[in-house]
Image 1 (cartoon, helix red, strand yellow):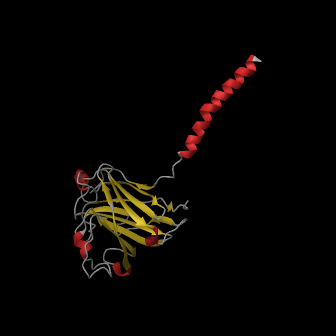
Image 2: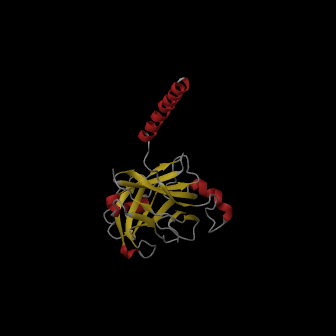
Image 3: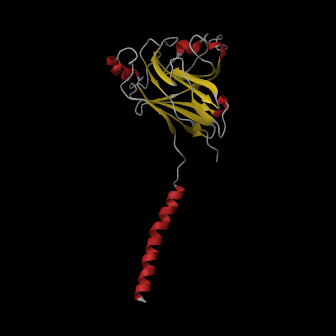
Amino acid sequence: MKKFTLSLLVLGLVAAFVAPSGLAMAKGKKAAGPLVVGTDPAGDWGANVDAGIAPVGDALGQDLVGAEIGMADASTVNFVIKVNSLPPSGGTPEISRYNWDFTVNSEAFQLTGGFTEYLRGICNPTTPGTCPPPRDPGASPFFLRQGACLVGANIDCTEVALLHATFDAAAGTVTIPVPLATIKAKAGSKIGPGASSLGMSIYSATAAFVTNASLPNDQLLVTGIYTVPKGK
């Protein structure tokens, strides 16, 4: 009888500790985080010109190390570019450009921009329909374009939206929020890799009005495919 009573007591104590823990886990369960869709070694910026200039890539915030895609909210998806280092100010004005070519259900899109892009943002005749009239692109502008947006072949390249990124120097990230509606995406849509004018899906480069492949740059190959989750 004593053994039976002791056993019940032990079971009761176990239940008291385990049950709340299980409930806490259920309540504290978080939604799936962003998906890593590509990585790149640190220290290879500028290797297309001279491997010895790699440290300059950190000073410019152009040494790519990763890329992620995840939901910001139910109607917005974040495209996150990760670099080995960003300047303390957050980014480099005008001369550092980031470009991400991707597809949504096989339809081509492109994100291109920088910490500031006033020269190209005010008026960009290389993209039909964006100039004139002149405009103020604002801080950290990224231009969402659709179609065959290749340097020297922008006949079928149309600007869809002007977006604004967040540059986080501490985290070394450039986060571009994109409304799902602007890329014709919905639950179940597949966001996959595209190919930029430099070859791979994402590049960071020293640029002026246009990007020249002969200038130092870094590229990252996106291999992952992100599926837009169902809303709650």
